[in-house]
Amino acid sequence: MDAKLRGALSRRTFLKIGGAAVAGSTLSLTGTLCQKQDESRIKEYRTLGRTGFKASDISFGGDPATTEVVRYAYDKGINCFDTAESYLGGDSERRIGKAMQFMDRSKIFITTKLKFGMDETEQNITDRFRKCLERMQTDYADALSIHAADNSQIVKHEGFHSAVVKLKAEGRVKHAGLSCHGPEEEGEESMESVLTTAIEDGRFDLVLMSYNFLNEVEAERVLAACKARNIGTTAMKTSPGLIEIETFDPDNPTETQEYLLWRFEKEGLSKKEAIERIHDTLKDQERIRGKIVPFAKKYGVVSNEELRKVCAQWVLSNQDMHTVCITVVGFKEIDMFVPLSGTKVDQAAIDFLNDFQLAYGSQYCRHGCNQCAANCAHRLPVSRIMRYSYYFAMQNREKYAMGKYRELGEKNASLCTTCEAPCTGTCPYGVNIQANLASAHSLLKLG
Ligand code: SF4
Ligand code: SF4
Image: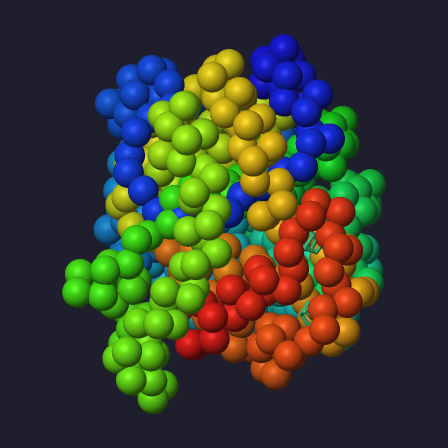
């Protein structure tokens, strides 16, 4: 990013930050963005560190709804795809693999990821990876990554490294990588600590990390270390906030609201109770919306989509980040983000993001933080629950988010409703932990 512009934001990162909730329209922040919306192909490719691959600056990740979505991304010039064994129960790999049959394999870069603990064996890692290849109908993956590495021990998992060495020798994988969200449970290490260990280890060629204008200080230390070792860098979680909330008209619900109503009623709630539940969920968001509207209008950023684009553009402005991995569900995300390729934030965008920090600092739970978990009476994984809420509200991944939340079992945010909340005041950013978790619970508990 332009040093002056980045400096302008950095000087204000001491200010409290934010990201809250709400729904909206589709105005653009700047003339630059308006113009770029007509440019529908990838315009910039950056070298992905020592892999040498020229990656599209916008890359593809997540849960494609169909194979056609993946092909559409490729047709737009996206050549870097990130998936995982766990995404959509393997369907993400299957859909990408099916689409791959229509691509020039030598011109795309596919990363898949495996999540495992220290007790996982080399043989199982190898076997699981071979199944990834089968699902993707390909002979090799460009990279195999440790999925959501949350401590330094896993980074040094000898079974993983040994498997990679052998798979490389067989031509089944070319590079090793890892993804890291930062800590999600009490006592886990920071993203910086885990990634620094990985970088110094020397065996990783790629990192996938959280990077946004609210975690820039920590993330940019990691980026500097990657640069020194020529490690490829991919950004995720680039959009840390919301501007709009969806208004709720029970007679004319949105698709998501319709789904929620259906789920609530399936759970045994009456129609009236289901409607009240949704109104309750939106209450806090509406309060925030009252604060944001004048501010958003000033900059002409009045929709979540525009916020997501400005945030992604902020990340794109830093050449040390080689590609921005967009969570893609449908064609919409591709049409939203591809026009940003090759662009960078201008002063208006910087001013907007600074004001956003000022206005919403106390609303956003930083990805991978979890500093407050030790103060939770029930040792809840605060950051993780809020991340699932982010998946639900920001990434249109409602089912996935609810499924992940269900995996927490009884250790969930329902405990907040009867708690005296010793966590109050322990977030250094001023997040109201109890209120946010209660809100997350009402969103996620349906799964
Ligand atoms: S609520 Fe605050 S302290 Fe707790 S995880 Fe989120 S940002 Fe960190
Ligand atoms: S209110 Fe929730 S997050 Fe806070 S201490 Fe109680 S259970 Fe933990």
